[in-house]
Amino acid sequence: MVTVVVAAFLSSGLREALEREGFSYLDARGHLHLLSPGGVIHLEGAERSSKKAETGQLGVHGVRVVQVLLAQEAAVSVSELAKQANASVGQAHRVLTLLEKQGLVRSSGRGPQKRRDVRERTLLLDWLEQQPPATRREPSLDVALYARRPEELWLKTSTKLSTAGVGHALTGAAAAGLYGVGPTSVPISLIRISPEVSLAQAAALMGAEVTERGANLALLKDTGGVGCWGAKEKDGIQVAPAVRVYLDARSARRGEDIARQFREVALGY
Image (cartoon, rainbow, N blue to C red; front, top):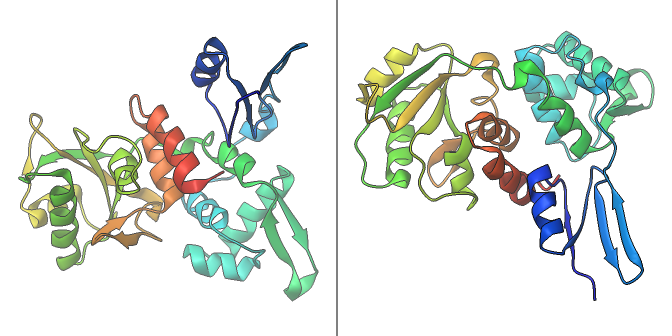
């Protein structure tokens, strides 16, 4: 009997560990390691082409459009996608045209009936995470707000900001924790703040102390609305869209493992 580990994707480190322990594996990127009585079949999978890594004209607002597109269950028109992503029809059309050139979406119908859908979500997310605007470093402000437990901290923060009318969203490893992925406690939780409000203003409205030591929150400017737009309430806390949670977790130091787990459990592609 051969035990095979199957996943949307497996990091190189995890693949090496599985090989050392004598496990077979397969992921959506084409990595295959199959042990059999007659020998071993090992395929490294297709490398991402340089074409897939081209940024084209994708900006921060385009990132938001792609995030919304990844959440679609069916083909959408340009106008439908623009509305759901809070983008102009022109912005949505440019993003879809870019993705079509990359071979990541396909179209059907003509004129007003034309629709686009994602060919393979795994490949589109792989492509998105390579785009600099999708993982750009944002202006941030470290603050401290008293709470006995992480869940209390997140709820307290979200309640205060919601009461003040400030757009915000918990993201990264902390948000992944609400899905039961990763550690139950993180040193610093990431909160994306609407660019309409300065980070210092947000901190004041929360009653948080700006500090370089002992901080338990990092406020991030949410350029392009990639975290605040489409945020949903979970356990009374505003949480960024799942794709954004993944991208922010992946961008953090030593965050690859948490991001990988979140992608498998919450996204599934």
